[in-house]
Structure formats: structure tokens, C-alpha cells
Picture 1 (tube, rainbow, N blue to C red):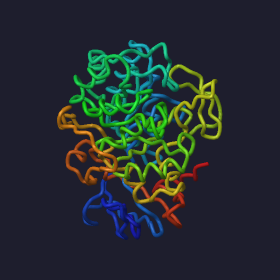
Picture 2 (cartoon, rainbow, N blue to C red; picture 1 turned 135 degrees about the vertical axis):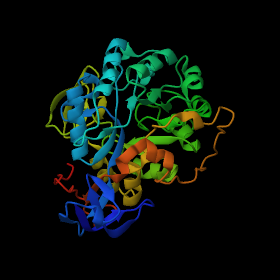
Picture 3 (spheres, rainbow, N blue to C red; picture 1 turned 90 degrees about the horizontal axis):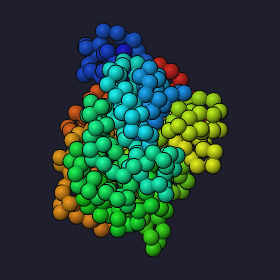
Length: 405
């Protein structure tokens, strides 16, 4: 296949008019390497690599926590059909034996040509703060336990790449000290204050689970985890840009506070994503989804019902820079898939003063490319925004996607 006349995304976030040559779903160097000479005219369209979603519980009527390999395959097919080609299925807080069964299912899903590639497991829970449990069941929350983490990781075939931790609960700091070189530790579902969060980051936890949600708000005298994450120049912060979890003005402000190089777009999608309004399940609890808003019976938001592609488009519609947002949704370094042996020690991870940011990391980072595999060589086209604050209307090469509601 030859994609002609498209505005092709470049590693620096810009677009360049050029042709692409595709053989066996991979981009190749020249037309000479292409056997199928079918031409796709992408004039007026933008061509993107596949997106990376590191935090998603499910979609299209299925959930990773169902422990159903066939259901997981349906999720992966749905994700790829919407431009997500690298994916980290995300667990919930559940009984130990159920978690073992859930994590073991990941080994039964091989590479799927028609599905997103599984790059690891995101372990959200059970090491949470009951005060900020969100949609997790309080009765299944447990103290941080390195042995239990390693047991689950073994059941998964060492596929756990990210684990959420409340730094203010007993044993949290010891957990960070023991495993921060084995897995990316993400701080979240916590009522931690600034000092506690900053200490956790000094010890090696440099990631935040869905910034703003399930944590103390950013206040002028009590900045909490959000303030600590902003100050830590190494910290990557997840954001759900579905227009429900975070107000558009806060999304714009966060881009200014953190800089786009430290934000990771996620969907946090659950099984209602891609489905009609109705009643669904998340972590053993009943969830009602209406017009893409998913809530428990008490009104607590329970994940999103929006895929990452539509979250990306919404972020642009809210006024965020289109090239910057696209980088956030597709860059390989969003994948915490490499062993964290390079994480600075507690002594080395010095506290960054406000406003300090690390140098922008290139999308072509070799280690990140290794972790992401062929993710960058998947392609997708979208119509360009008419102006910077307008979300592009989407169309894939094979399927037209509806605009998000």
C-alpha cells in the first residue's frame, strides 16, 4: 500500500507532506519494497503512528479484570480499530486469588495482527488509600507488599510494568525502596500531603496515576501530590482528557505547569467504552454509563467511557497544542516497559525547584523504541484541525471513525 499526499507526523511534533510505503503493515523505505501498489490518497489528512494507552481497564463490553482471554482479545481489536496499537491492560483492587487468575491471562494472548499489542500490565491497586479509593472496593485494599507484587508479577510472566501506590499508607516508603528498580511506581489514590509525596519521589516513584483524580486538590497552602509532582522534574503525570474527569481550563493550565514533555495522555477506559448507554461493571461494582460519563450508584466517577484517540481529539478541542497532544498520545516513552535500573537512588533523586523541567526526550530514544517494538511503524490518518483549538475529525485508512460526542 502507498499512502500519498498525507501530512506525516514527524518526531519533533511537526507535520511534513510526504508519501509512505507500507508492506505487511510496516513502513518501508521505498516503493520498490511494496508488493501491493494500492494507492490511498491522504490529501488533506494527517498521518500518525499508532497511539499508546498505558492505563485502560477495558472496552466494548469487556474488562481485563474479567480474567477472560477472549474478552481481552476483543478489547485489543477495539483499541486497534481506534488507532491504539500499544496497550497496557489495567487491573482493579480485587481479592488476591482473583488477581492471580487475571494476571495469568496475559500469557494466553499472543501477538494479534488485528489487535493492539500488549506492552505490559498496569497494576492499579490494591496498595491504595481507602480515603481516596475512587471506584475501588475498600474491603480488598491491602498494605503495600513487595512479596505479593512479585507473586502477581510471576503469574503474569513478569509483565507488570506499572503499579499504583498510595505513599501515605503504612509500608509505602519501604515498598518504594525495595522495588523501584523493578517496576515503575505510580503515586495515586491517596490523600498524601506535599511532603509525603515529595519523599516518595525522592525514593524513586516518578509517575502519577490520573493527575487530579483520587487525590488531594492543589491548594495554595496544601499543594499535595499535584504540587510535588510539578516540582519533581522527573515525574510523569497521567491525564484523562475526556472532558469529564478534568475541566478544560485545568487541562490547559496543566500543560503550562508541567510542560507537555511530562504529561502522559491516558483513557482510563472501562467496558462501557464503545457501547450504548446502560449498566456495566468495574471492579465488581455496578456502573451506569450515560453519554460517556460512567458513575457508581453514589455518583463516584468510575473510569472513562472514551478511548484514547477521542481523548486526544478532545484535548486539542480544549485549546491544547495539537502537535504536543499528539506526541503525548503516541510517544514510546509513555511505555514504562524497561527495567527501572536507571532510576536514581534516594540520594541522587534531588528535589527539583518549581519550574525546573528535564530536557525534552526524543521520541526516537533507542530504549523506548525497544520497549515499544513496532508501535511507531503503525500508521493512521486524521483530517487536520481547521485551527489550533479544533479537534481533527478522524478517519483511519480502513475505517471512518465518528466524531466524539
